[in-house]
Length: 316
Image (cartoon, rainbow, N blue to C red; front, side, top):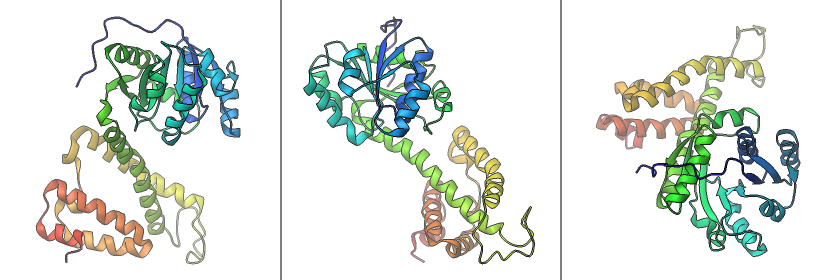
């Protein structure tokens, strides 16, 4: 479903913004909003890391208690973990600082606007604006927002227009997600991004073992590799070997979908798959288990032979 068309920009040219809290997402959004002319007037920060980020990346913003941040802001951004969002909304409602017409945005991917109901009941305009991006806590997070899609959910067409205006102003692309589909939207993003990290980490671990031994680039050929932990140098080489391959695979998958699949499962090479499971199991049975699960899903998607499917299911 397409978002309502934007016929006019309903957002003021300059908003006072409050950030709760100065975590990785909140800091990046605050910085991005300031870049396009808005003013972050208050920021809630408790941990040492959050305080450091706020002072470094939002130096003109005052560090204030949550209720004072909410009082001063026309646009209040709630950038807290999903598990804290409901209690934060209820707590803010109880303070009486939320005036009718205040824009209240949360950045949770899993939640729609229902979690903001205590504030909506007071007349706030609830918006769910989730940047589909990973955040590291470094300044490049802010730059990435201008290339990101944002999952937006609002109560009505006016809310969607406001959410779209905010995202477009940041250089992002707004994507309409219904209230009912927020959990599915979040699950798909987590599956594609979080599990990719685990997959790559497992592949790097296995590749380090494969490259281990006398004659490893830049090492002493007489080194006792059996008893020595792998070095940072080995990790770097393994990552360098893997990087062009996985980068190309990701680009191909995004451009060509399932047809980009190559390798032993795509070829129906049961002997190669069996060998892979044996050697990966010798490195770490958990890596082998991950390989088996993903091989099975790949085989299911391409309609592989019953023999290969049965083997991967453990039936043979």
